[in-house]
Image (cartoon, rainbow, N blue to C red):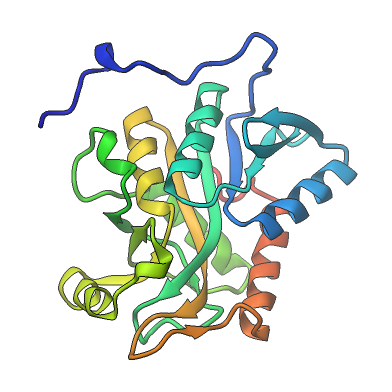
Length: 246
């Protein structure tokens, strides 16, 4: 089946009459605990709370940036990104967690994904060319920014899935060996598709929270390595985005 033209799309993202525009640059936080922390921090520093569908939104007018989230899963993340774009967003950085597939990735390692493979259902509805990929200049800027803070960012392909409780070790092994997939998440590929379709700059920073290589799942959500690195990067993102913006 061919993709429908926009003339046949029933619902388009739009700015409501009472909605204010957003700054061009912003952060999209996947996980509720990170989003709650970020919103509280910025609001204590004078950020403005705004209504944002089924998520949260804080605008830091002084530093001309916004923070949105949580947005778990491809459909919700795509809705959040679409809404941010129609309100004026032009450059968005996703911060989230991922499961490692490569033995070269350890719990707490940092990944700036360079390409995506869709295992979710959202990206298929956005006309796109393959491979799905984020903005290369923004990825490079993020890598340099992390390096300036003493953090090594790895790169690689991420596979996004809608069904974390149906991740088959045989499929994951094939994705790693045949497709070069190094990590798994739930949002990245869909957001690459939306960003490319809407022609905005998008990239992501993911922290390895668990490992899916081998015969059994190895969670690391409560480990010191993961929690420490996640908190470190989130603090840096909340404090300063001038050095990674394009």
